[in-house]
Image (cartoon, rainbow, N blue to C red; front, side, top):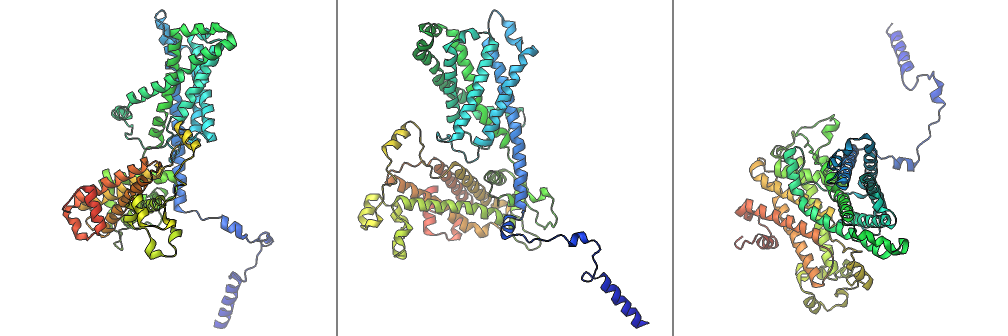
Length: 564
């Protein structure tokens, strides 16, 4: 009985084992299984948590961009109504001046102007507006002139509808109409090439009527209005100038009679001013909607084995992304944590359980240190390039020929007298500009090369202000002492970066280099203010760190302390 039972059990096991199971459905067995090629295996990249965060972020930003398009087109339609009201103004028909909009027949041009404004806004937001955009659009970019063409079409539709609805279209017949179009073309060029299409965080976030008044105060509307009036005057004078020069060629000298029509030119100037004012406040509206800060959470001290999508959007994960816009949002939020958010700072100084490791602090500090270290290396390389040193010149005698800090700070004449080797003499071919470049520079056709871009300056400023404000906050909030272990290295990095920027500026001054260092000075001011705050907070306790002599000299120079 036992033998029969065991044999039947073995037979049943073999019947249901995967290796001996019969395949009843032959449709699966007849399908060939082709192996994937190496190119296909390489093209299929695994989707990480960072990819999900980036996709979520792009969806959120695209939603905000759609809202910005709707708001800006609505503002443009409202300004069109204001322009029509101004053009219709008359003491003899005062009532009709403010009641024309209540007629349904007058709504169609308003909707057309709003639709055209939304099309131009979509092109501007998707193509022109960037976080790493230059302060002025280059003249050589085709997208810049495409925006000029679209802006000109918008201004032509805006002006023609306003003139037609105001009732004085008879005065714009003949060559006068072309003169106004020429003035609108000049205004479109000024609006595009004198505007800053850069995504930046607003100083005041509008959430209520009180914040709206603060936003109006911070934006400095009187300055914008004054600047707008000056630029409008420059474009406005092209209208009478074109009438004087080209009017007699087309319609005879009778076109000069329009020059004595003062109310006509006042209304045309008001029409141009309203359109240019919309161009000036456009980016303030877009930044107010698109660049609204996002608050990211920190991962908890314990491990989460199956996190939700919201739990994966932590600040430590977002800081590791390579997306430029998301990187700026992350560092700006980290700066907000260091300056204003005491609750989230507790997570920065917390320890993981189990293990007791400062994971959040290590992740935050390593990202900031990496950005600052890259800037320090860039400054050293740029300074060495300015004074004429290159690494290829020092491959033979690496120990003796590496340029020291004293050599970088030395004036050019003294350096030439000290180093009488021809290979070490500064090269001026890259610094001397041609006559064509000088002429183009006079007319602002080319801009000086930035040593540090505006995007890099903002990223490094946010990183420095966040990192060293966390150091200051650690005095009263870091009960585990996670920051004190890295204090010596962080202060040393800060001093080294300030010294490298100072060495670059001295090297630049010694050869009269024309590079633009506006954004570099912004970073330098952030670094110096960070060092001053750290020294003022820690005081004499920094002496226990045994800082190197060069770092102590930098602290004395920046903080103006003699007995440190």
